[in-house]
Image (cartoon, rainbow, N blue to C red; front, top):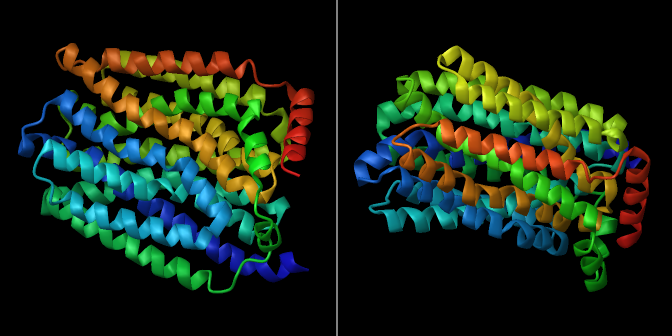
Length: 411
C-alpha cells in the first residue's frame, strides 16, 4: 500500500535527483572544455593541466566513503543539500583562479563537495523507493551521467566562445542552486521506505563486516580500472579533437555529445536487463569490458573524425553495461541502512581513478611530443586488467550465495 502512495512522489524525487546529477556533470566537465583556454591564460603545459584535471578527483574520491557514512547516519536529504551548495560555490570560484596553486585548491574543494553526492543520492533511492523498485530507479538515475556528459559540451562550448572560461563557471554555478530548491520542494514529505531502516543505525560490527566483504572489494578494483578509461576520455578528448584533429570549439561540443548519448541509452537498457538477470551478469560485464578495450585500441589507430567518434560511441555503449552492474550492486545485495556506505566504498575505487588517469595521460602526451596514441593505449591496457579481475568474480550460482551471505553480514 505504501508503494502505491509513494510512487508518484518517488518519481518526482527521481527526476529532481536526475537533474542534480546532470548539473554535477555540467559543473565537473566544464573544465575539460575550458582547459585549452585555461592553459593559454595561465601559461600551463599539458603535464600541469593534467594536475589541474586530477585536482577535482583528490577531493571527490576522498569524500566517497565519508559521504556514504554521513548519508547512512544523518539521512540523504541533509547531505545532498550541503553537498550541492558546497560544489556550486566552488564552481563559481573556479572563475577567479589566478595560478596553478589556486586552481588546484579550488578544484580540490569543489571535488569534496561533489564527492558526498553520489552515495547520498543512492541512499535517497532506498529512502523513497521500495526494495523491488530500487535497481530500476538507480540505473535510471545513473543514466544521467551519460546525458549530463552530452548536455555539458553542448551548453558549455558556446558559452566559452561567448563569455570566456572565467564567466562560464560563474554562470553554471547557478544551476546548483536551482537543483537544491527543486530537491527540497520534492522531498518536503519524508520518505517512507527508508525511514524504518534508517532508524536502525548500522553498528560498528556491521561496518566492519562490510569492509571485509571481498565481493565489494573486487568490484571496487574493477571499477578503478574501468573508470581510468572513462575519466581519461572525458578529460582529454576535447583537447584531442581540437589540437590533433583541428575541430573548432563549438563542433567539439556537438561531437562530444554523440558518445555520451550512447552511454545514456545503454545505461537505461542495461539497467533493466540487470534488474531481471542480475545474478547472471558476469558474462555480460566481461564482454562489455573486452569490447570497450578493443574499441579504445581501434580509436587510438583512427585517423578521421568519423572513426574516432564511432569507436568512442561503441566503447561507451558497452561501458554502460559495466557501470549499471556496478552502480546497482548495493541495492541488489545489501540492506538499505548500509547502502550509502557500500556505494561510497565502490565509488571510491572508481573516482580514485580520476586522480591518476588525467595526470598519467597528460604526462604521456607531453613525453610523446603531443601524440595521444600512447595515452589511448594506456586506457586499453587498463581494460585488460579489469577483464582479468572480472574472471575472479563468482559465477552465476556462486554469486547468488555471495549475495545472500552479503545480506547476512548486515542483518
